[in-house]
Image (cartoon, rainbow, N blue to C red):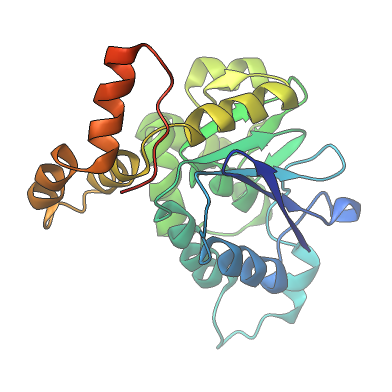
Length: 240
């Protein structure tokens, strides 16, 4: 299950709700997540979290018994939905408590920012399960923490606590839930056009980017940003 809440100020929270299995993913939850991010009306920042003191324990292992040897693997569905999350124009923030294992770790890596409580534990365990992790997933993780650290975590299947995750660059801050919400509100206060354009550059989508950059210089948001600086006040961006 997925709970969707508007928290004000343009922040929309998506909470994984399967606490009995530490918010493990299944096809229904992935469909709900994909559907939610496909409707970004009014969203200036997405905040992802999990219910019951855990972020996400990865793919629901009890569903592995249902797989058809000749059918699609869960990775295809996971990859498509996490790609959709990465394509969001608005910033995405993961608040990680407890377990962030396997696809749960990859879900956090699909977000722009990761804040973790002191209880957070990160792990990618397929080497202990006898499963080869998906190339796209490995690339997604390596894109965040670097090839060497991704290799270390995947091949050893070791667990990394919050403090070490901060040192490794897995998370941006070790923080409380209240701080994660404040962080999301800070992100929501930025200029939507500027953020969307720069996220495109980070994704390597450079076609038409110079035209978009030129347009941004003459946008209403640019005029508002300059006026706010000169008038020493907070800007009120409209995304135009």
